[in-house]
Length: 466
Ligand SMILES: [Zn+2]
Image (tube, rainbow, N blue to C red; front, top):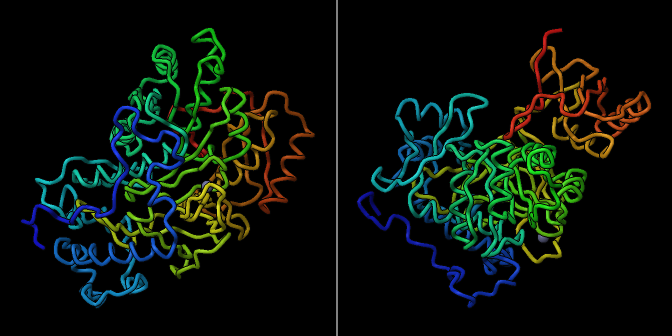
């Protein structure tokens, strides 16, 4: 295979779901891609092995970045036999990608497809440094739509639904690419975006009779708070059937789900997750909401490691670690053993829904982690405990640090929005946090709406001088 070979990697040989034409499609089938989402694990392992072999040969031929990594580690792609063989290849890090893109703009040396085959670019948010860009060929964008369509169909989204996208549309993977996935599924894609802010969003939802809403928990909470003022009607009168979101902690928490169900009048509140560099990769709730299923084991291989030592961990029930991914079927900017920095807890027990991929919850990001007297604490875990005190609290909170983390001297200062807080609530909340997370806190209550927030994301940690 060479770069002039326009077929690049051969298309996926397995049958894809039928196109949506008229009423010939089984709208009641539970999964978008029945074959892949319920494939027995051994069969999936064989599929992954075959695809990985092909991908490794492609990288050895077309990616200067991985040619060098293979050479330096002594890895011989032609000798590849089992998935475990790649364990001798060092991890790929975001710092390496950033450096490669700076020295070889715009995509870096890990670009493996010719530039004339690249049709789309996205960027990872630059919260921890400069943006990293991902290029996609037409094949890559098709795969990404497939991965997101699996999540949406599982939530119950069907042709005929009016699906409002409330994520930031600019450069973001859940923005325009999500709109494309809604179109692939055959539903009505409404690209409103977080850019329209609360008032504009509410009006469009009403005018277009939106039935599905996608976005962050901060944004859907802000919409609920201002719905009556802007539209003169309660949120549950708008007719939303399904709410799905991600991008930050919230949607996976039962307390938040319950609150949104009540406010919006629907039991269908779901969470999905990915990592921008990892696409096409999707994790999403099924109706049982007991962890998010890995929906794309046929496209992305996941390994679990100890974030401190890099040692491999067993993919077993309840194990917690950083997830590392390898693209099995990516052309433009494929990555091998990439460290995401996302700490997940995995579940391998069977799920009633029938999907076979493992399930997970995101515990936090390794770079968000705080260390309080030697105990590792993730801001999302604190938020999850606070959320249990709903309806006394609305879930909005902030961690106040006097010096940058990760090491924090106790007590950990928290600001929590609450309507009628008293000393009793403060004591109970602090005791619960100590019992569940082994962390000593000092909680200050503020009135609802007092904490600064944006439509897209609420800042969980603020730095203030003492
Ligand atoms: Zn399930």
